[in-house]
Amino acid sequence: MQQYRPTNYVVFLRREKKMKSLYRMFAFGLAAGAFVVPSFAEERATAEEAVALVKKAVRYIKENGREKAFADFNHPAGQFRDRDLYIFVLDFEGKVLAQGANPRMVGKNILDLRDVDGKYFVKSYLGIAREKSHGWEEFKWLNPSNAAIETKRAYVERYDDVVVGSGIYKAAK
Image (cartoon, rainbow, N blue to C red):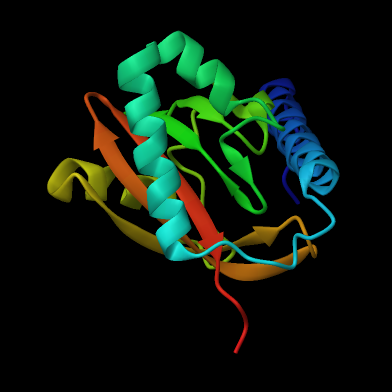
């Protein structure tokens, strides 16, 4: 049996505090998602609509500047929210600059975020944006409209030094 010296106990408490914070953030994200998903959420967006929304967001950044654009992307009932579609923006370090489904994520680094299978999908986003400038990434994520883990596909596009993206949930076969 391992003895808990004061330093081990402090490390244990810090880890426990971090885990509680992550659980609270995840639970809040689920709850927030449940309130912002419209009643017709069973109608899923298409891949073409996700690409169109990202291209619209990139144009909006060019025309209105980052500050206004990112604020508008974070608005839950704004022009960049449609059914299960929303815009997210990341820098190349993994820091969230805008997040239409959960604006509380803004400022947080999610580089090491993994899906339920352990896939580092944010790192994949950034790799796609660096190497190809745009593309799709597939991972498993919680769909707030039905509280089920589903396959999600995210389209990401590089604009200057940021990655702009949006995703769709694939319908079960």
